[in-house]
Length: 425
Image: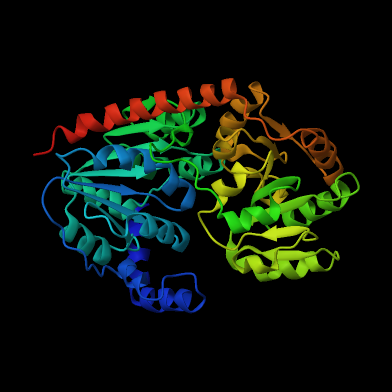
């Protein structure tokens, strides 16, 4: 199977330039830095040791920030490289570390031998750490050819992904046995990785429960907050197509009880803002867009957030949060978005029935009476009416339990990674 995988990646090589250029035209890639995915590197490598973290998208990027904060302080580590795939994750990390002299961001090259060899020849990391479910066969096998220690951290393999790998079991074993250590996020992944041939597996819980040591909450600016602070506020985050309509219909129901209700919608992909605006306008709702905050008025119904990395500000002023990617039947096998951040800020979490992507996390939050499943706007409306009767009050005991769980997970993961860092010269 690997022969054919490698063959087709070689076959794709002549088309890769055009492929990425077209994605750039569609604004799915950075206008200039997309060339990094073709092996172009402009950052100097620097001294040993260099630790490399690879994540795919925003959620995974945010999950490693507590790790990065810890290893930034480690004087033995001279440079930390973070690679990502998606444009949004790159924007967030570049914004956070753009001025750093120790932490650098780059887009990961396509999994084509020519590009990954350029990448590895330049960076030659002392330790490679892949986050979540990022598996790139050519890259992984080339890393191990070079005797670079390779870890899979906060690993999550869904049932759907597992069944795909199981169909090519020998190929899967060839890949997963290359990891020196797999630290998994849940029991399901632990079982899947054992079956797929991983050799060293440890389970400390989901790293996304951990939080950064830096100031956790960035507040809205005073002028903006003054416009909305006296209103009843709830938030719908990480929404996907059709879920915005679901939330808008809930808003219309809520308005019968709370005339001053403000619904904040943070779509998973902000390139959909224009379409969402048009769809919600058909419901005769008054809509404002966050970056055009002069439009915010007392009669505004819906506030659409059109920037990345702002969610915590709105969780902080919301008593309740509905999390998307949980109502769409076609996404059932990969449903659910990370509820940990709003839960940590004392929000009540609502979600649809499809949360398999974070099933263990939701079970834990449900045991704390933090999360609740809803299936239609009427159910969500009834729940929100009750929750919004009182002002937001953080349940310090629940927050403390979440913090402790996250701290234990983080400390265990750091301890395991440090074993491999200490081996570096």
